[in-house]
Length: 313
Image (cartoon, rainbow, N blue to C red; front, side):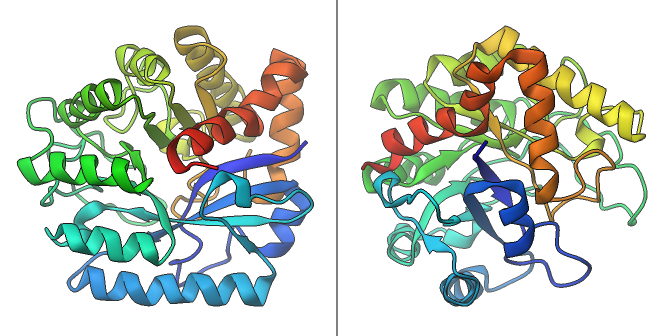
């Protein structure tokens, strides 16, 4: 079964073994892989432009088919779409959104783990942790959301056909975007998120948020980061917990809301979902649990519907 993955950091990963590569995507049966530009530090816009060029070069070298609208997706190809993780790359300038759009960017998270010109993240305070450590539990940010500029950005993204991604956004930011989404009748996504009811991390979505994404016609990409799935880090523990997250999102939001957003190459290796080649095992588990009809929706049909609505074509 083919699949669409709404988020990987493979484009900007600089060390270690990649969890997403041409060979792994072929083994996994990938239809479309979204490649995020993720950057920390200064001069983000300038560096983002260089990574947009790197994306083009990667597509040419690896034989990926670049996608800017839904109708660009080709059967029999590994399609690739360029995204951003952190609207701080816009550097407070609406014109830079248009430049990045013309470079091929078609989806963007508004924040990462720090406040920026657009708004506030879901962590009230962020502290880094050492490799191999469990991520510290942080308090949810519920009071601060989109800034005035952030609201302008969301409006402009909708006009251009760039999908708004609320992963990493605060609770207030989430509902600010949902209000816009309902008024504009344009779906938004949480490209790589899980259910807070099962794992109470600030990065995960509450049941109210899950229902809201569904009501707006959007999707939630299931995140494979063990820190956001469950405490049992064994293969079977992660398998059981990931299936439980999928079941919960389906129960709360319905069969149209769940998609895949691995976060590969931005997360430590999960013993159950080590890399993109493990996707057939996950989808087989989904088929046994939910049936093939719903599994196809999770694998690619729900995401494809949102791409058609958000990008056109």
